[in-house]
Image (cartoon, rainbow, N blue to C red; front, side):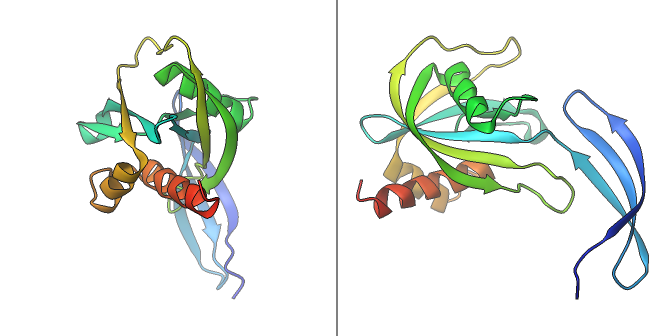
Length: 181
């Protein structure tokens, strides 16, 4: 099997500030046709920032789709024309006031490949120093420090349901363990 699909037609359904939704007709490898609903998103970035005391910086913020406060690592949407790492540095500063050093990639995450092409870039850094938090006008959050070992336990006990945060926490713990840190 080739495991490919060929786009026959593509129709824009919704053009929002962040998301664009389209309806595509595709030809499957067996010659049949099917419809695909696709959410286009500019992508995102997530940073696991470690303090000198082996604590990760987290933010708690209300997430409207879930109608609940969610515990996450600092993260945000990619800005057009700016490399993912620069976006990560910006989001870390804006949300926490931290400036990182020794950035390392933790790879990429496809949050839901069944309907969106979004890619989230994951990074690890150590905190170098602190400046003033620079929240957006519509952004309200609390910053927390959680020891890395405790954060790993929280992920494994399903106390952190956010996918990008789960992956970044576990990859950070593995990275540090594999490098004897």
